[in-house]
Length: 430
Ligand SMILES: Cc1cc2nc3c(=O)[nH]c(=O)nc-3n(C[C@H](O)[C@H](O)[C@H](O)COP(=O)(O)OP(=O)(O)OC[C@H]3O[C@@H](n4cnc5c(N)ncnc54)[C@H](O)[C@@H]3O)c2cc1C
Image (cartoon, rainbow, N blue to C red):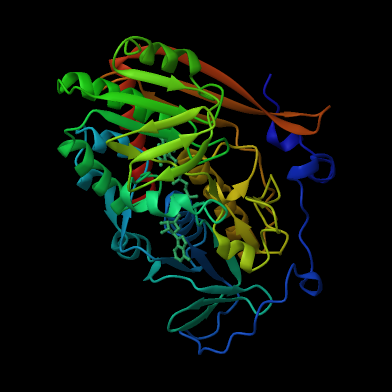
């Protein structure tokens, strides 16, 4: 039975949930002493209700819209380095010709026009947690509340061979031009051997590489290509919807695919087009190499991410970091939720309520997100789905995900998949 959110004792939960729990600290015990900021202010000082959101992806856009909706008096500023929102969810559809690129793109201007959110398209260079300043190339902006939804970075510092492969064999796991480049390769492909790699969990969107492999195989056949896919997976199995994905690959094993499980990428020779693994070398004509991932290094520089950690620890009920009124949501955070768009979107709504409540001097408790949904294509026509219920286990003092997988392939599920994405995009922008 699902446990009601209100019945969770917040303090007990914080104390008992081990690695997940962090409590807010006072200004005197900041994680690091940030460098003093010497640039000039870009805006007048806030009057107690300025909410600055960094990162205009699935989490940040939702947070911006909902903070404003929940508290129209708040001054909401969204800072995003790109000029256009481009969705990663549904980007595999774009790669294989099921959706136009335009369908993935939304202008940030909509947030200003419809929701009175100030949008700044620039890169945040630094954040001073002590003086509450976000630093941009031209100056700084102060905040009363800060929401960080910075997504992921490829974790390649100790594996330099990935640097070249990123340019030549794009992963398509961050929003934007990687997808355009990858699509061109797919459309112009005339060779034989293709390599697709999956990093060890956790990474952004667990089913996405498996979906890409299944769609690619279906595409190879439908286009009559003489290609062979080497699908190199660092994990022992697809972490979700395993039965459905394995069924999708089975039909291709004779001549079109090899699925290499528990196989680690050790090196990539970009010039010779060879990927070296712990099980042998594979030569290829074209590849999409997906490196390991981590929260952006900016979060480490400012002290929210401890040395050696890949993801930011937050309070699992409020998504507040160890610094009061600084929240980290989406893929950068380590929570009970999978790294997915629906999780970032739901977390943003929880944080928006908390921030709006604090601005209005109303006490609002954090809450466990109770439900999640995930779809995955198995070929160019049909999809399967997974629902997750998150239940608080009072004995273990942990949130337990209870998964209900429907591994059956349905064209109707593929339609629901697209409707789901359109529904969330509408909710983010309209
Ligand atoms: C191929 C693929 C398919 C997927 N399919 C699904 C799906 O079907 N369902 C699902 O739920 N999820 C899916 N996902 C996962 C989903 O895309 C992510 O989980 C989601 O985008 C996370 O939201 P976020 O806000 O944390 O990060 P993002 O959406 O990546 O947003 C982060 C933003 O921060 C900006 N930023 C970073 N650093 C700075 C800086 N210093 N200054 C200014 N801006 C900055 C970035 O430009 C970016 O716009 C998929 C992902 C991929 C790659």
